[in-house]
Length: 243
Length: 240
Image (cartoon, rainbow over all chains, first blue to last red):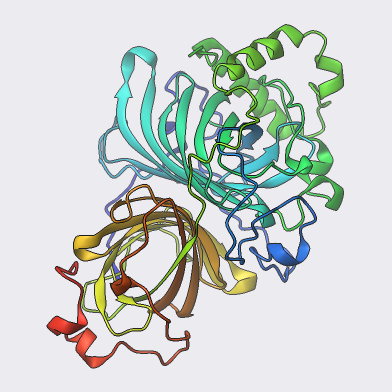
């Protein structure tokens, strides 16, 4: 396999934060991958374990015949960076002092239910810095990433991420119960870049399981997951939640 | 769109966030029941805004989206003659870590391994190393090119230690409007992969692309003619 000799990269986390922010961390936290006990997880073993109303399991050939094409379902999730996943990895490939086109930011954070009582899984993907926007003291990224919901499947999205205002991204597809999904998702940043609240407007899929629905906690800077959800205790996490 | 993350809020939030980090036992605020009353106006506004995007509850059986599923089988094979993959160890760490990027491009063969179809091309973003499975999780974003027929784009998880399902995000040519999912089965890491596409939203696929696949196993190989790209063993203008 070819390996690239990486140019000297500046991976200072303060580069990723808005310039007015505190330099509350001078060095990036050690990337410690938590060792979890082995789970005999078949990520897509939907036909065996999930009791929720899934009409098209990932392994059958049958179409989702009870998907109601015109109906919009709203799904709320929180994406939280608890700084224990080595994320984000700011790759200053532009080799400029100011955030510039060329910088890439792979990332992976934790996903919680909108009511912050259940750990659902993770996000994973990449933000491509497009331009620094000095008059807003922020940046424009093109974000391409996915939300993983354990055995339920995943949702892939793509669109703009502006560090200074809300945006809508396209829902490009999904797997599992989200197979065939279309729609859009509103990204609402609460605390840059640690807390983001998403509202999915999903079409083309069967009714979502009750476990994923419910009234969300209204976003504010102080929101936190319940301790049980944070610890991913069995009653406060999806079965085989993505980690 | 309301801009709720004003500059001053974010600075203040970073302070409180730092405090949170050092004192994880801060009382949890904003659980649903306590804050609902005071923020009912806010959530009403949230709901009002959301309703702008919800269509009224449908009772009609409108089937604007065909739901017929077509299965398409392909093999992706790395013959190590395309300089692929290019493992960019941008994390600058010894073990695979978030930050590593892996652009790649491999050859694509029909499921029966008798025809060269084209190529795959895209990128894998390493998300985490999974020591207990002796493998890695990637976010994979790439396309399958089928010569004059068009292409399919996909996005999702690539786990080097087990199979996964990716989303079909779209396509062009005969695949225009395609949606659905694709099952990725790795046969020999990282050289041979077998895909089963479950495609919806497109007209019947051409016969040339269909057919019974060779069951995946470690020893499967394309026919010599397909490998050599003999005229009868390729699709028209197969992607190189």
